[in-house]
Length: 109
Length: 114
Image (cartoon, rainbow over all chains, first blue to last red; front, side, top):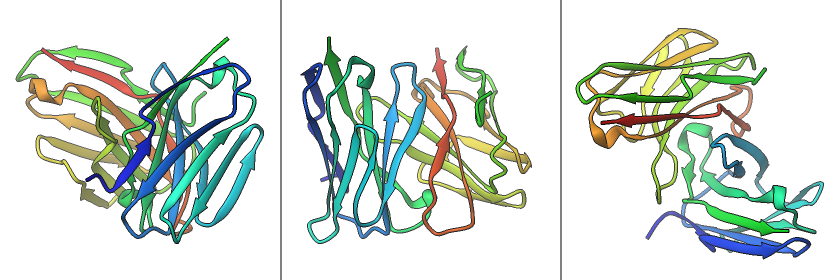
């Protein structure tokens, strides 16, 4: 069993739909990181959170430390949101992060 | 210009050849990392460096070496490339100021070893 698991692995949605991507982890963490990998390969940091909820534009990330679970929500999805979304969990320090295998999202116009 | 720049972006090389992947950053960060990404697997850490004189092996360092030429430059070398080193390689940086800091990634280098 992987220490960081994401679900679903693949997701296809229609433009405008509300999307949820889940991340469960079994390691102790001090922070969890959500990343977006564009079709061209580049990786961009979306959120880093250790408790509660963060919002940036149409993206919302939540974390439940007790349940060892985080979710990434996308409201009013758009084709430009099509990407691979990766969560990374770690006990402290970027070099200790354990990465999930990613959720491939495709948003259709 | 990107904050973290990797060169080359794509490379095809033959088995047994030595190859160097380069990374430079303008973030002013002390910490730099090299990861590889394989289909169906999460990013895995190859090497990391906390400063010019502090270099550490990651999870999968066998077959790789690194050089931190300056605070802004961190190179990854494959001394004798083999086909199972075909992967997407990422360089990343982070600030050393806090325990949990955001990581900034390069655009990736797609390496194919034939």
